[in-house]
Image (cartoon, rainbow, N blue to C red; front, top):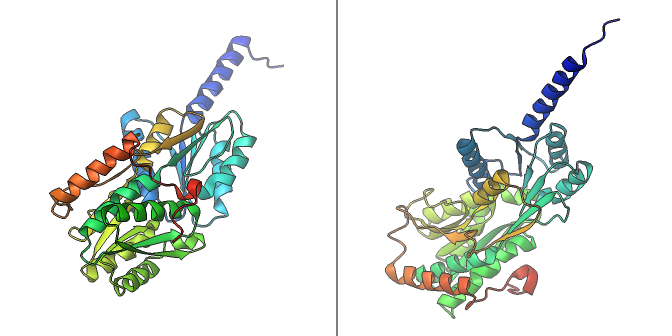
Length: 327
């Protein structure tokens, strides 16, 4: 009978344990509909995890879902491989994160843009209304017609938060401003329909809109192209999209999904994390591509508004909490 020595068995166990720990130390990111190169929400998440990778020299796992049924399967696959933390990008992954996190209580999970109340889950949400207030202020000041537009993606309360803040900012800058808003659809396909985005933008332009803000994921690409073709101005979202059409992109409402993902990968903290202007979670973008469009007058007004929001002097209503902005 071949009996292995206790020392050899101990070394084998230690090797296996070390191997598992190495696997378990790798975070995973599950990108949502639209793909990691959507030039918007998912791409911001990708930039965040890539920053973590470059700084640490470590690896991460990732998966891009192409239909909603893949979410739970992808998250469970990452958990079975021992990845931790497993980061679900987008509110649509919340139910899958909740289910799998319960099955793997020793692993860490995170959800971006929704709250899952479990001891091993970090939920990161944003004060989108604050960043949208700033770009609404910029839009109204840049508009020559007094009419500004909003094109949302999927018609859900989260996107209404953008619209609500945008309207408040526009009226702050110009009490007589008119905000025309449209949503692209009611399913996940609304995030990746540039043709429809372009149609909605053109319809708004025909009503006198000369600045349009898109909070619609990949659909926004069509909005921006329509603005360029019509010699109007557009506002990007989530990532800095000013470079897409310099001279057309008035600014971008930054939603620092990259920072959120980077921070989670660097140090998971169970519970809810809320990122607003004060925390550097939202902002507006100024760079070489739009510097000439942001006049000193606009800059002064928006920076004053930003300071007042951070101090609490200006309180921006939250559509989801205050049931405000019924457009």
